[in-house]
Length: 360
Image (cartoon, rainbow, N blue to C red; front, side, top):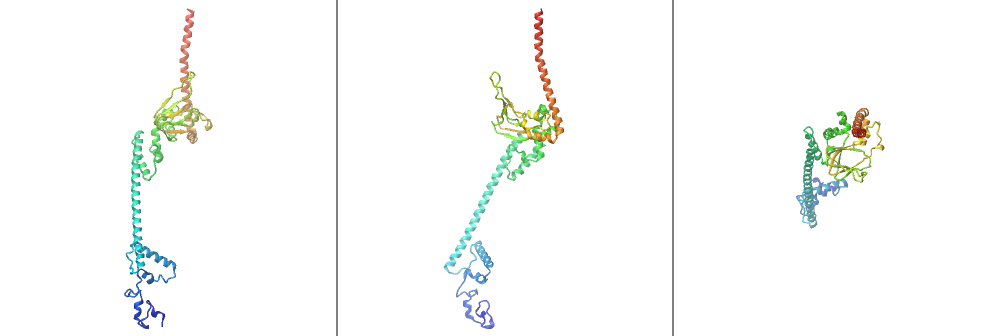
């Protein structure tokens, strides 16, 4: 007798037709009278149970579980066996819970994304409004204003924080130069030492300026400290005063520096006094205390930037600004001499008249 005679799969008709085997072959779906394998039928039919290939077994079992969990167990053909039905119910409920968990996470993600998007949009609107106020306060012309907001909006869309008081770092370098020249060139022309300088020299100094922002009632420099910056005020008010007393014991009055003015001209005198490379250890000392009265926006020329400017354009910068410095000093000496002459003239006239009175 061949081994395949009693096999449900490999029965040979030539070796005999044993009809009683039909009642004991559960793989024959037409006959399930003796024993129904139910949900385990696929594992036996495809040879998963007999297979010794573990990866093949694992992959088939994983696919079977994933298929039935995703369909909530609707494709399971169970028998009336109690534990088999319990297992099928467990698969159906687990698939439903996983689906609800997934839907809940998707809804939470959508809600968070929507809330974050609304928050970003609201934040962008506030930033845009503040920057528009900054633009209007500084009175930018039509050649600058149209280029500011598109660049700021592009930065805000990338979820990058922009300081409304100082949006310059987020703008292209050419626009930054135009803004600094618009704000600072008129103030540079007010500096006595720079009034005779050429326009390209003023532009070079202007390009070296850096934006600064001070809160109210903040000390910028105190009396007796090294003066390493020259400040140009574009918004706000600062006080310039001294704590020294007069001979009679009274304090000297302070000075109010408002928008469009500057402080620290001594730094330019230090940088262009004739030395090829000014020494930072020989910085001028502030004779007054500078303190903000309100929030202050402005630009500063630092000692390091002044050194860099001189080293970058040594001949042009040195000769142009040193000549301006000599003219400025000459003007001050001329004014001083005329003042002294005016003061001495009454004394000479008075002594002459005294002598004439005595002679008479």
